Image (cartoon, rainbow, N blue to C red; front, top):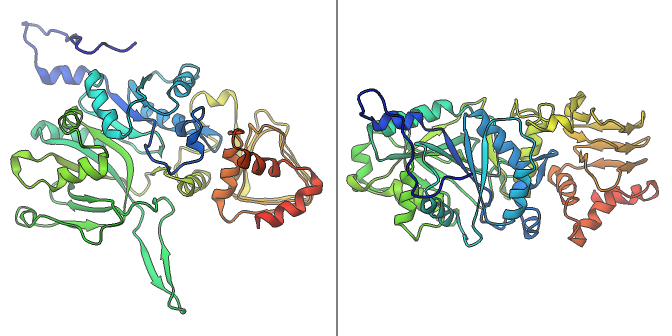
Length: 446
């Protein structure tokens, strides 16, 4: 049940009949808002099917939504609002039928009229659902192992001293764009696979002011970036960095929702709200935004498109996001799956069993083999994920698979969940063909 808008929040009265507003804030339970829609078209054609929203797509046989909920439950969140626009009924049905063992309460907030993230935050402010200060705002396509408790404590301390410190963004250092020239004078561009090719984040941070953000721009079409000259007189050092990755996780005060209600033209959280707030020069009108930079052992990344989908999947298989690894599944999955780590980062499903692999076959990871798969003799399988929920059993015989482009293998695995698309269904059937067709299949994929 959701508390109706406008209903008074009960506050425990201390002895003497007086209440301290700061005390009531500490008594409030920690809440979080998860945006189930990315409001982009980078994951099409999968997101064209309303029966399968992006947050319900499988990543290494685990739904993306379950990764986010497991993280929030570990962070101490007691109440979670999942804001749904595309495929809201499907997400709500999944939440109602879930088997989570954590105590977090999940509520779906549906609104089919929202077209961007700004509309979603304005609708949340209108319904007056978020009461905790601060609350966690994150995208539903984030996979992370971050310990967010220190960032929450730092945000609370800053906001207690300065009411204008309303937001903390979590950033991860992944390296910038590296452009070199080869012997043939051709440019070779190297970039982290976790970066979206449609974004080029540049961040200006004051390291002497608790990493206050003074510049935030992710538009790759801009050849230059403006920085107010007044910042150089009030800040003795400004680090302009291009090696940061936006993790999609924010710690916000409820004032953030009010700012979106006041500014109806704000549609994007990063490119409009955060960028304009950082560039404000007048002291009384500033919304101070700070950055929390993750440590080297902490992992966080968003799944923007099929390219980053493959990169995050490979990182999970290589155990860069420990303890978020295939052999340590989120709560509720232990009743269905149990993966065992073998050599070369290969994971094999051991609970349901009935998977047969030929003795002369060779499997090179990272990869996964689900239950009820049959791999015959003389097969060479490299960097593949075989689902435990395929529509038909997987049978391979005398084949050689070498998917250097790890994304392609994962996409065929993912598209098997969407039989409505004939093209992707044809690709799926190629993976499930008989032994007589395996040699031609390998040539086509190479």
